[in-house]
Picture 1: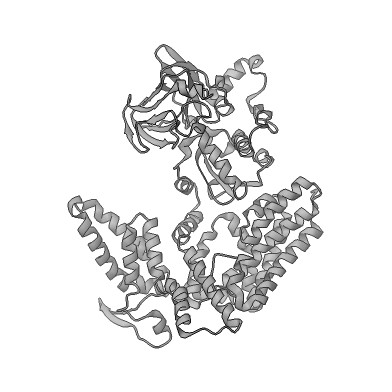
Picture 2: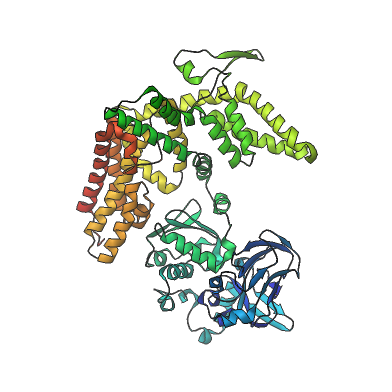
Length: 631
């Protein structure tokens, strides 16, 4: 690897990182470099580049050079607690910088008087790309050798090294972290077992999981990570290393990591993960990115329908105006579904979202025959002649594929137009030509073809779900959580949206709720069979989210680790899915299952409860009877 020589961004005394009184920097978990002891109060740019991160407290700054070096300058130790006091920033995040530019000023005397060490680590966070990294300041030079060079040095002087490099990783909890808060201890132990901060390419988190993109996944010590007190499970999926920490706690651990390396803020896992995905995962992720922003609206619509159904079942009389108002709540999103889909697609593919909204609205323009009226025989399509072909022109209320394909096409057309239309008239001609060309193509070509394909695909899916004796539900219920583990389950969002738009009900939701609660049932059974109180408490906390529709903690924290509970849960899901298919159960909405999903089934509550009881009981019974925790 190429060696790297950098000039120090601060005046002072250069020291090796191992002399810094902070285990994360001293252990080079943040990256390799050096530190400046007793620094003077000015941080200057050591190269040309840009400011990638400026922490709100101004105590740390991340830089990216034109040559590709990512540098973190962390003024003082634990100075984040000063909340910006004694610091003055002279640049903003995203600013271009030239070598020698003043970046930050700080009052080193005031910081020391406040009880903080002013030693300033200067580390290269993408150190894995380089060999020896040297920081220079006048005649002073401090070098940090690369991994291979360290091994060579240890081999040449085994007596000094004491132990092989492979044994350097701690075998158990690091005593140095014992007095730290739980979130900081967990963050540092995770770094110890994934190759350090320098191995993290980007990071983010969801409701329960810390999601990391790593430079070298071979450095993961998965068993050691699983044994960290506070970690409920870990797995590698969708090109991300995902560590299950639980709701609330994951935020705290992530904040600790960001505090240790502000350069992680603003990083995008999606782009980094997308590069490493399979084709199937890329397609699924694209569907997810398009439809996930729409789902909350459709969830709310389904809940409104459930509440209306409950009131009607209870015999509550509703006036015409009240019914009309409820229909506005429940029908609007589906009537204008192409506008939502086209907007989200344009946004996903880099186009102007408002153009997507207008194109989607053109697909349901009032001048066109309404799709629902055509389906009921109350209206007829308008036929237009194109190259001798008679093409039916209709509205696409409730359609998904025509809006999805048209949104992709419009984003590409707009990007192509921007390449040759002068900037001075871009604001006028680009939107005009995009809307005009895509409206013609959408109504005469894309719409008819995609709508025909849509009817065929979703007709086949509905027929499969309605197979006799619940066969379709048995297969879907048994395999759904396997597909969730593979990371390609987002593709089902389009299916559920289309089912709701075309039938007003979602049979798929009814099938998968049994598969979800089955994973919770198996996890509860493992907890019930476990005698160790600490493990039992951990298993119960991992099982609870499954009853709210979130299975990852139960799957990756318990069931998949032991495998048999996962298989027994699949059996429970299959049986529950078959029951759902036999009873022709379907929800009024999507996006919520198990306990929260009850509101989607107020008109078929007994059947919904039966499906959930079947899924839970079979998974729990098989696991409790056949699984031995000692295995």
